[in-house]
Structures are given as C-alpha cells and as structure tokens.
Amino acid sequence: MTARADNPAASQVAVEAGGVTLEATQAARVAAGEAARPVWLPLLPAAVTAVVVAIGLTVPSYWRDEGATVAAVHRPLGALVRMLGHVDAVHGTYYLLLWPVAQLFGTGEVALRIPSLIAMAVAAGLITATGRRIASPTVGVLAGLIFAVSPTVSEFGQMARSYGLVTMAAALASYALVRLLERDASRARWLWYAVSLTVLGALNIFALLLIPAHGITMLLRYRTRPADGVRRAALRRWLIAAGAALAINLPLINLASHQRAQIMWVPPFSPSEIGNAADLLGPPWMTAGLALVLLAAGVLALIRRRWGNGGTGTSGVDQRAGTGWGAVSALCVPWLIVPPLVLMVATVVYVPVYTQRYILFCMPAAALMMAVAIGELARLPGRRVTGWVAAAVALLVVAALGFTMQVQYRQPGGHADDIRAADAIIAAAARPGDVLAYRWPVFMPISAAYPYGLGRLPDIMVGRAAIPSGTLAGTTASLAVMRQRIRHARRFWLVQVSGITPEPRLLAGLHMRLVWTWNTSDIWLQLYVHSPAPHGPHS
Image (cartoon, rainbow, N blue to C red; front, side, top):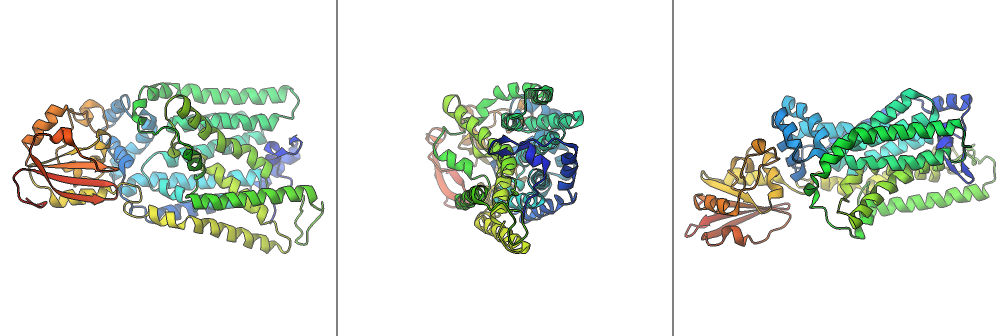
C-alpha cells in the first residue's frame, strides 16, 4: 500500500526537509483530479459513520444541554429570536436550523438527533476527500473510517447540540482550503472558502480559531515562494476571506461576549486539561494507543527517509514515495494545536473558556494524522495485500480500543443525565398539589426535555415564565416567594444534578421532612412532605 508520489495537493502544502515543495504546473493540476478519483470514495466512510452513530440513537436519555435545545426550539420562532437576544446567542444559528425540524417532526430524540448524525456522516466524507487529495485515496479512506469508529463521534453524533454541525463545517472549510491551494487564482474557490469559514463561525464562534491555524498552513504553503505577485495575491485573498468571515460574525461575537455569564460553569485551567485535549477521538487508553502508533510511524518515516535504499521494495512499492506526512502535518498540526492552546491561554489569563466540547471541531485533524500514520506503518515489504491487511488490523485495533466507551455512550445515562428515568419516577409518584425546585437554577431547562414528568409539576423557582422573559426556562423568583409557594404545596420535590447537598436556606423553618430519595445517573430526586406525614412516596 502506498501514497501517490505525484499528488500536487500534497506537494503544495507539504513540509519537506528543505521547506515547502511547490508544484504548480498544469500537469500537476491534472494529476490532482486523478488523485481525487473515484468520486464515490467519500461515500463509504460517510455511510459507515451514519450506521455506527445510528446504532442506539434513542437509547441515551436527553441530558441537560439537550434539554436546553428542546426548551429553545419548541417555542414560536419570534419567541426564539427574542430569547437569543438574552441568552444562548452562541447556539443561535443551530437553534434556528433545528427549529423547523422541531415544528415538523416534534422534539423526540430521533427528530432532534438526526441532524447531528447527518453532520458527522458528511464530515467523514469530507475528511476522506481531504485525505485523498493531500495524501492518497488510501489515507483518505483510513481517515474517514477512523473518524467513523471514534467514540467521541458517536457521543456527539447522538446529541441534539451543535457540535456535529460545527465539526462538519470545520471539515468543509479545511477541504475548501485544500481545493483552493490547488488553484489559488480561482475566485469561486476563494468564495467557497470564505463562505465555509463564515458558516463555521455562525455555528460556534470559538471554531473561528481555525482561521489562525489555516493562516499557519498558508504561510507554510507559500514560505519558499519568492515574494512575487502570485504569493502576495494568494496571501491577500486569504486575508480577505478570513477577514470577511470574522467581520460577518462580529455582531454575534459581540452579543455572545455580553452573555458570557452563561459559561461561568467552565472550571479554571488545570494541567489535566492538556490530556483532556488529547483525548479527542476517544478515552485515554485509546489516545495512548494512537500516540504509540503515531510515534512508531514517525520514527519509521524518518528511517525510510534517511536510510531508504532509494529504490523499489519487493512489493513493487516505491519506497521513496511518502504517505503524505508533510501535507497532512502542514494542515492538521496547526489545526490540532492552535484552537486548544488559545482557549487554554485565555482561561489562564482572562476568563475560563476552555472545555473539550469547544475543540471538537479539531477531530478531523486527529483522524487525518492517525490515517497517515497507519498508512506509513502499512507500507511493508512484500505483496500489496500485506499493506492492506496491516491497515485493516490497525483500524480494528483502534475500534477495539474505543469499544468500551461506545457501549457506555449507548446506555440510558450515557450522556451523563438520565432525565428520561427521572421523568418516569416523577410521572409515577407525583400527586396533585406537588411542586418542585432545582438545587441550582442552571438546571431548570431539563424540565423541557420530556413532556410527562418534570415539566408537568409547577416549578416554584420560576418568577417569570420562559417565553415572556425571553429565557430558556424563566427567571428565578426570590427566596421569599419560593418559600411561600412551598408552604401552600402538598408535597415538595427537590431536584439535584451532579451531586447531592443539603438545602438549608430554602426549607429552614418550614417543617418539611424528607421521606424519599431516588437516584438515577447523576440526578437525585428528594421528596419532602409537611410534618407530620406518613412515610413513603405515595403519602
């Protein structure tokens, strides 16, 4: 198994020993079209991704963030637009895209998660297309399949949140960059690139950190070119495209900056976050295995470069031909490093903004790097089938390393909060006159996730309802108002998420007695009654 030695897209962004190799001849461009064939190749990883993500799509319950999605998209469009002026503007584009889906098909798991599934499948196809252009068709397919079997792809492909669409948009923008580097005078390709960056920023403003990463790729691409009109024109066009994307998204960036209180839950920086950033494709043990493969492949590539016999091995594979290390590295290394590094630095010096979910759009880069590493290891002497077998085995090992997490994500509590089970408990045990409250107001939107449990009990925390107040779940009432409401209630449910702690202020002096506690995943339901009262949930 080998890469194409004459792939011009690879040579145009490849970091070679002496700099960046440039092949801009017409013959090279013709070869670029040949390297992209067959045109149906990206459909294979896309289909595999869709099938993998579809397995158990409805098994995991909605979790707190998905509850926020349901709370946003079930309201009238005008109310949604008004809400975005107060909260969740950073997810506004996603909500607006999902709103017609919710109106047509409802807010069940299938309807609201299918867009993320489709987005991840399209991303896999784009990754494949990128890999085959800058390395080889084999590397492209390997990258798409590695992406398909990633537990993280399954987790967020089965989630009614924007991360799948953001990942797809990042893959599209990077593919557009590769295409325009094949023909950097094409206005249509520059426009396509600018539009893809604009869409990326509209879906998640943090994903605009792909722009400086692409800037590094551009500098590598033109680094060895003389400061002629061609280089200046290309860099000028890139600056215009990137600047246009930033300018168009500037109102959204400004609005989101005024809503930054919404991410006050993001913890301060910890050195452990560095390892967290490395676990893009799967759990730590999978990351460790991938790192070993990457290291071994890098060492093998250096050995071949330095001590290769310069000829042809017994398999007929040209040992001088690379698998696309330079091309893939020039595109993917900045993509993997710049976004998390910027967010981590901002977390240390300004305000906490780093969490792994905000860098998931870097997953395609990780898949491409691993694909080129496996491609390097698979270039074994002997018959061509030997390389294919080695690549297949490596891919199976990658899938096996992530299998445990694949199973875990497909449990009812696989997305952390089993709201469905909590709703079932409430539906079975609640009585007329019951009320509820959340230990922390930030979790109030989970009542919107399902219609038959938490959302049917009056929430004493609500001061003004969600739609009139332009918020996800309503404004919070004063402590005095909440206590007065408890006094007039028959029974009181306290909902706690991510831990259980006493609630002394709300219940102090109200003579409420805890009679039952349920726990499902990380949700605790505590039932209180006025003393004296019979024991049990059905008093």
